[in-house]
Image 1 (cartoon, rainbow, N blue to C red):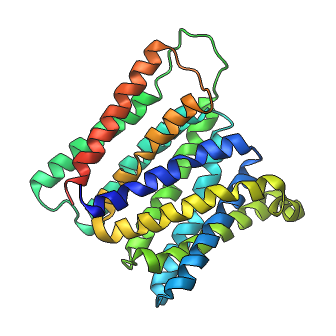
Image 2: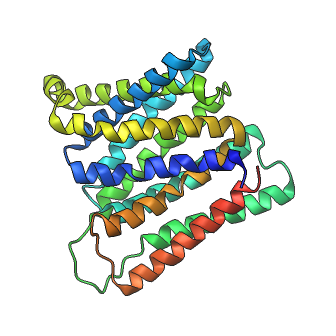
Length: 291
């Protein structure tokens, strides 16, 4: 496996633990988003202080807007965890993004240029989609606490558009990971604060320094390193390859939901989950070989 692909897989590990940490720490979705934003921008500032890259207006604008879109997407995703559990919500979120983001890379930047590459790419995406929805299979014959899919899925659908913008916008000026990191993390942090003031008004001042907000900063510290790896992967591997590789984070989140958060699945559901995870890994490796 090439170094480029290893860099492309790093965000999956860094981002995959985020939902697990957020669920363990607790707090309101807006506190989780703001805490994550704090951690992200700290990483952005540290990397910038050591590297001091030259950043043009376009290289600042598009990653910054992508970061703002991310904060909205992250808020809707954290909100969905209160309607559904992590091991059910994450595969659905992943599946929606897997449709949107690689298509943008193919349509707007002509990635996967050959017919063979397009064939392998789209078959792999189909396997990824089957895999992520397989992991969220629910046996309706089992009596358990009911999850509110009617409220959760629209949140994930709306949020997927924000994640798509976060992935696609930095590609417009083709900003390298080092160049795009600080603008994007500033957008992430500022976007979370703006959302909080829109929703909570003056009480946002208290939320900005609550213990839950501060504790959730660890998600952002890990996420910031994942963002650096992802932005680097975008310039090395392109959108259509980089994004599907990151979606192996659903493996981390799903297994973590079962093993760490103790989200229950019966034997049939576990079988679907295992098959789904195998498909995800296989498809992600296939896509990685296209670069």
